[in-house]
Length: 96
Image 1 (cartoon, rainbow, N blue to C red):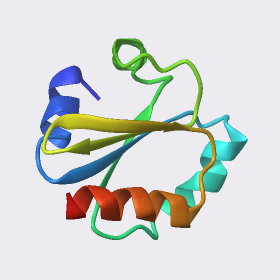
Image 2: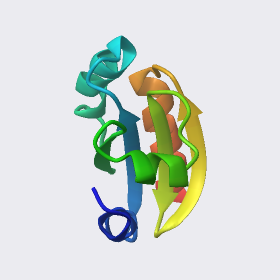
Image 3: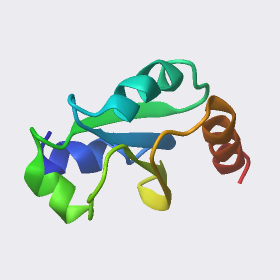
Image 4: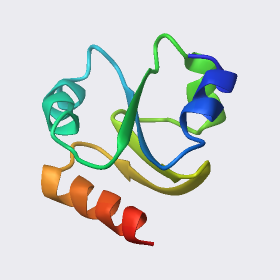
């Protein structure tokens, strides 16, 4: 993913960006949870395939989850998260 594609992907609505690695166990555990979330666009960025983008966004560990609303970064979570915690964060962004 290029920086331009990334910027376009986070411009509209509530977006959750998952910075992950194929070799990361918690990343693989998080994947089915992301598929169950509602009212959010999920963008996946493989840190191995996009090292420049990862560096630009200060990614030092995976999974790193970044939340955006209409192009503005709102928050970041590190590590494996529960569906409930992620959905709560998404619902708060959609309500605000």
